[in-house]
Amino acid sequence: MKRRETSRWIKQIINLYGKKPGNVSYIFCSDEEILQINRQYLHHDYYTDIITFDYTEEDAVSGDLFISLDTVKSNAEKFGTDYSDELARVMIHGVLHLCGLNDKTPEDEKTMRLKEDEALLLLKSVKGSENEI
Image 1 (cartoon, rainbow, N blue to C red):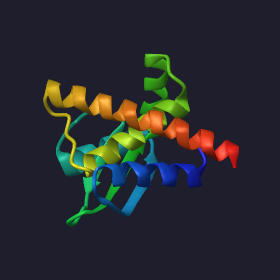
Image 2: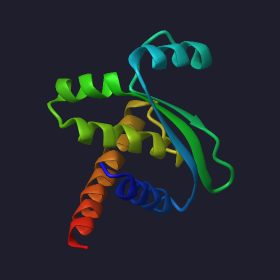
Image 3: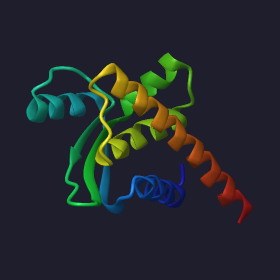
């Protein structure tokens, strides 16, 4: 995924939720690093694909998104998806959290998956328009 198209896509998603892009940082790490962050800051003792720290103020979406590339890779294999597609899903998952979506309940989780799918369709159209330029 190219940085410019990724940035454009993320900004489009943020705008769709009526918010303004602020400072969103992606920190790519290993399973062990994300486990340590999970233990230290959230007091959870398990691996995960992403941890989102939300610094959003008013409508300016900002945050740090820690992504375990190890877990993204293993999830891509587990679900039979392309690694770059799984990475895009995890990245936008964090952005959707920053936009106010949650996934704590089964209903919220269903909505989150739907919104991830919608965002991934938008990414495909962004990629397509990049190729036309």
